[in-house]
Image 1 (cartoon, rainbow, N blue to C red):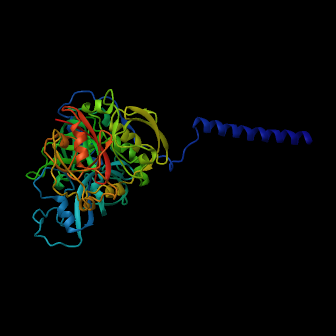
Image 2: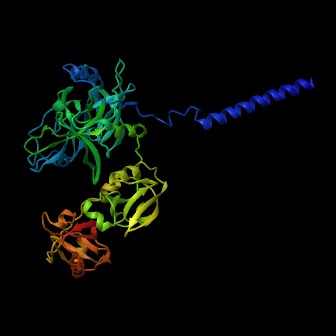
Image 3: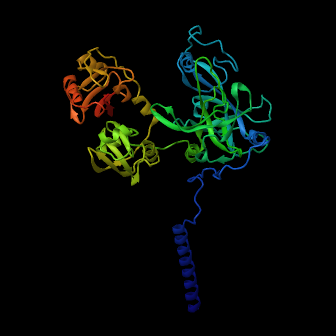
Length: 523
């Protein structure tokens, strides 16, 4: 009896031990299944090279295969009449025109003549707009542009092949102004299964590649147009002072195409049609359109599904290094990101970074250009401390920065344009094309300068001058010239006069309340 109990005890012990060892091995090897609620994989994409001939049936077949996954989106929102008038236009200047499409005056499909000062200024009105999207999941998830659904209190979706009056309600799941992307989901489902669009690889697209756009231009549902990629990595300002690299295409896209897919010759989405370049004379397509690369949005999809996009921020404004700046900065080439300004109280400021620093590496990875740094920082989890290798005054040092979380709304509020009217006090600077003056109490008040601010006020900047090329504008305050502090226009003039023609001067200026580093080459 005793032997049987002992045998049973050891059998149980061995079984428990085996189970424990198995669990440890599985966890070490990553074999334990992860909760789908914690990890949402991005859709698969096809990165195979684009090969094969384009024939008479190529685009017809793409249209037939992909159109069922493209949807028309109609929204309703509450807006002040003045805001709507300002958004849609007027002005004689060229502009990048977001394409909401649809009615502009509060009635569906029309309202061309209701703009301007003749319309009563209502406090609030219902605005209807139209756009496009595409289905990425049978559960009713749809990708579109943020500006199509932003502020909408009602979203309705029409599916391909169904009647115009058949619409399904949808809700916003997640939005990202920085990539102008949004994920919405049907809250009313059709009585049939939904198709899914296939993802291509936007990084393999090159100028000259064939593409097709499908959308809802001017309310003409499921219109297809064909063109080529005209260019890649076109900088486009999606939010104030923040840019995204876009695909440029000459495929005809117009108001209402916004949020629709840009497809490669395999019928895979490689971009989300986002904006067109237009002018006051023609508000439609003139052959210059922009699409957000799908790879950028695809990487964000897991976060869009959670409803929150988290990005890192260190609080610096950086720019590319020009060849003319290499000597002044003590560099051998244009590698690195030049720090133009440092936000007071931000992560970089706390780490000891200063305007004029050149960031050479971030978290052990080399920084070849300023866009590299921006991508690295935004991809870093807030709260992470990372080393940065910087060049300052021809000497290298390492700073440790604890990454903050990017708050786009707060950042936009901080960078609003300030009143920079100045008193005309002309002291021209030979070779730089700008006039300097001194700071008076009234000017300091209007520029909202700190009480102890001393420097030379930029009163005027000649067009096409060295100062203009360097980015100086009236209202800037020069506080350093070639790392020498200056407290008034006389001192600034003296230091600038020391710069030989054809050589560069490095300046630290206060621009809209922040210090910026500027390099100006003397004519």
